[in-house]
Length: 318
Image (cartoon, rainbow, N blue to C red; front, side, top):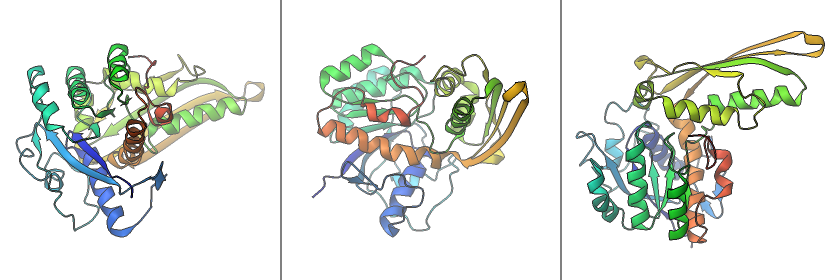
């Protein structure tokens, strides 16, 4: 019998809402729509148990996890009308480095800690990684803050025999993965890239936060787009835009200018509209299972199979 993965979540925002609801929907219906790998190393989509959750919002703390995911400013839609209580009460998150030991104690029993708080809080992200380290759990950072890219922290996870996955997930079908695929296609077909840009607009609370703390996210996106170096210096990212009426949607515009045979011009303009949290959850479900298997197989540090799912793995720019 497969041992279910015990997961603790840090942050109870839209990304966690999409993840929790999607797993519940799969368990209730068996539907595999949008699921890339129904089974990964023996673990199914539904083989996940949430055992702890942390948030700072007073409106979420003290509520059951499946109630807290619908508390504003969360705006990811309900996927099912019936969502049973999880039995996990949302606890107060870290409010300072002195509370790392408390949180580490409350993580007891979790195999995998998923860090899904807003990006742009470097010290907070590393403090939770420290708590996971002390609790003996694998750590996944799906934000753009540098955690797995911190060589000293990665070395400490290796020494402790624990997996560390990050940073910043590549959404299932988001702007970065589509843009990168198009740039790669140009190169494969022999065209010369002249210039390219990307514009991203969204209405989630994480988007609002990224507008104010965009540095790590912009660098992480560049890491994903210029991983093969062929596009380095020719791709620009416009500042992120927060539009509340978009709610959990993200709208992206991509432009590519290139030259074909004989120097003739090629111009591409593309618009992509997705539910941003869904794209994250579709990848997070695989990262959780990769982390759990690495932990159970005693493979410490960064598991190489996670690389295609991340914008900024160890070794990329901070």
